Length: 313
Image (cartoon, rainbow, N blue to C red):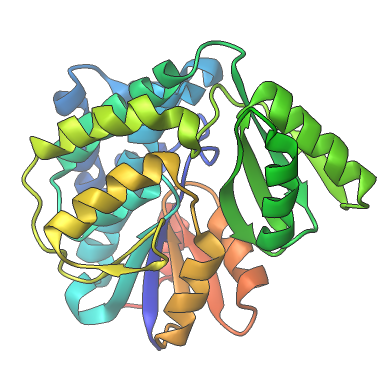
């Protein structure tokens, strides 16, 4: 078995995330305490108790998802003997999950990851004014077709492919008028489904330029180490190990396409046949099963999931 660990992105958060693990395992509590200390507030309490609308805020959801994933990983290491360098071929994460993957691989500390994601969420929220941007999901077309629809809809505005999630799921992002035009064009072309998304900002498009510059400045102040195992970068759909290349990929990711479908296929081509989604939710597990049905995929986020994981000691 050749394993990859993958880490979820925004949208997988839910009230109660990480609570059962923290109650059962001291390793999980230590991660959450470190994140709380880094942010100077009890993010863990928000994760456990909500309210949902506050947890869903980009500035909270991003570090919370990272915290839940790394808490789960630390428990797997302690309870099941998982050793990333020995047992895992590579790591990847969807959007903010790339930061989680890099923290798991030792490229950045948990403290730096929490602070960077808090800043990233705030910068992405601030980059586009209220109501200026929008996102839409197209269900059915491949990335090339969705890109053509986006280009036609853009006109003098912005409409770009934000996420190529695979299995006929492509997300567009840009100015509201252009994204609404894209939905209308898609519906007129027989796309199975085209719907506007309830999001707070137009992520992963050129409107996020100010956020990319904010992240460049923040990342310049953080020391990056080579990862203990390769991490696949969203914008490259390829592994990166050089710290400067990682820094550049994280900056480019703010405005660039999350090439998730290509990343999964690249990992499979490199020999990965088993994907473990670490943290909250099962979104990536579902995508992997549709992108690479020949591979095994499962989610690990509860004490029961940990108990079911093979003992690698």
